[in-house]
Length: 289
Ligand code: GLN
Image (cartoon, rainbow, N blue to C red; front, side, top):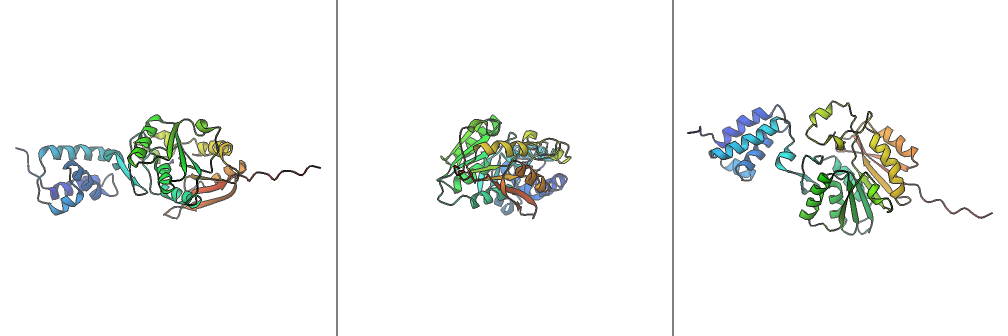
């Protein structure tokens, strides 16, 4: 007969092992064990003496092995919380980051509560940003684009789950699917990591295409600065997330494409991470002479 191991002992042993790969090993162990025994985490605290059955321990060990191999918790659980929404995620989508909530917050800051705006989210991934805006601004119509059909399937599933009807999804390269339209706000969390950045190794479970963007990480932001000019209303804002050390470069790229009123906002860690710029207002008609 297999050895009988109590919940408290399982958690302790696995927490020690996970400490090598995780900054929250105890929490990860609790979440994974809760899932393996199909009980909420609170059950673990109330019943530390329980002995899970062999099948549950095996399920637990399988997920612990994935975590030890560096897989993000969000992929193992198949979900991540963002802007108080439970979002489905898959390896086709980036795991939504807490700092991206700053982008949502800034976007809501430029969309009045009763505005009936057309909002464009470029590179939507799991749909995190687009869904948060669609939910907070039900009168707006949100268009979300991604180049990956697999990512869009996840985003569309999230929209159904949240019962959001004011959002639509298109597959394509940045603004390609909406070239004849005009938007009142454009948001994007594009890839912006340098292709040789050693950090990419620790992010290897996530789609490289959603992370890396050329030698200086700015290739896609350069393309966006140009492409968005053709689909944005005069004087309307573009909000883009970028790396903490890219503030000046992003400002330079945007002003080279005639964006104005360029302002950078800090994330919760005080790092400059979201730049907002406006397209130039239409020129006043010239007097006939
Ligand atoms: N913020 C991500 C990171 O952890 C990068 C996201 C992106 O490239 N859009 O590096």
